[in-house]
Length: 110
Length: 119
Image 1 (cartoon, one colour):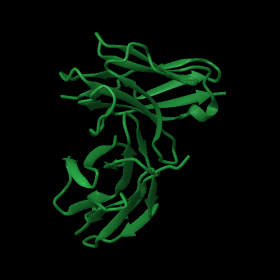
Image 2: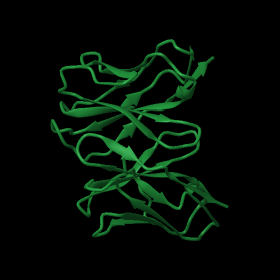
Image 3: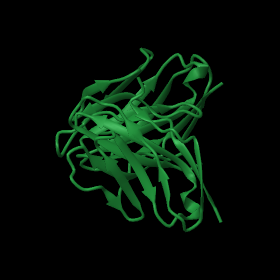
């Protein structure tokens, strides 16, 4: 069965650089979520989209933005990267009750 | 206040035995969903099981079952016949505002429990 696809899987950036993470949800899933998981922590919700419109917003820094495109894929844009942004970034998608996560993008900021 | 509490930082179980991972939650919303995810050392988040607040029966998925006690606000995960591959971090999560079928809300996670299965 198709799963959520995220790219890249690993990303190394320097402070103050920008990063773009991509997410391709499971086909026909209408909602996309982004979560951030710091080292040794539980995932924290950042933002979600339902039918290409922002549906909810969590503790997402102003330096981050996201959007969902007409083909339902989503991108998380991160600017002025800080050391504290180093984390595992998950995209998840859902159609109904179950929420499926992608493999994550591991971002390291040096 | 913590909405999802997992009080067991670590659990150990012998291979082929059953294990229960605890999860309690706090919400005033009558409609909610409870989830369990497995996160192996490789990092991916694997969906295991879902229980809606209005579901009359406890959810089961293969070796996984959810012991849902609504009055106690607990949603413990039971893994039967543990396997070495079950060693991982397990997260309990809640989504508020489930509308008896579909919901588009974010998940709030507990702190996780590391399960180690011994041969």
